[in-house]
Length: 154
Image (tube, rainbow, N blue to C red; front, side, top):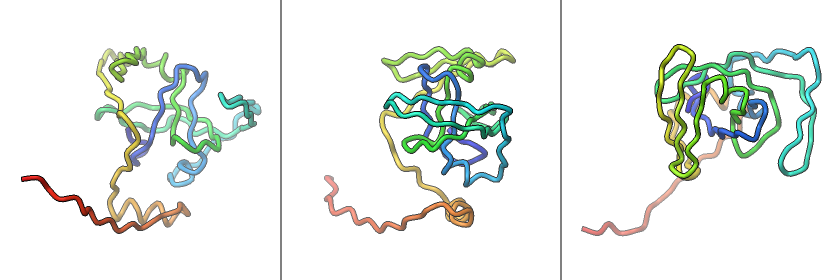
């Protein structure tokens, strides 16, 4: 899934009432958040809680090549870049099949599509240009040199 063209680690969470974006991931986007007219109190499954009043309205997302939009509330989350909660899932008539790790969507214009989730975390490979943009905006970067010493069977 992509947010404004950037590859994002996204959790579709039917247990979340709202949708959220990581403050760190959001800082790498060329978009300015809005200030909500109220302070939102958010409780997490780990028992911690926090307040926020920042939201990115109508964030452009791409799923399976289809453009969709979400209002994403800023939180200092770490494990995911975006959490799509019931506000977004219900607006897009999402039906989750947890066993097969798929989500069926029927968006308001009548378009239907199926999204197949990843089986685990994988680090996406990004281009030099994307990496440069992230670094220019203050994101952390790491350079790794990897040698695969396993022998190919042939």
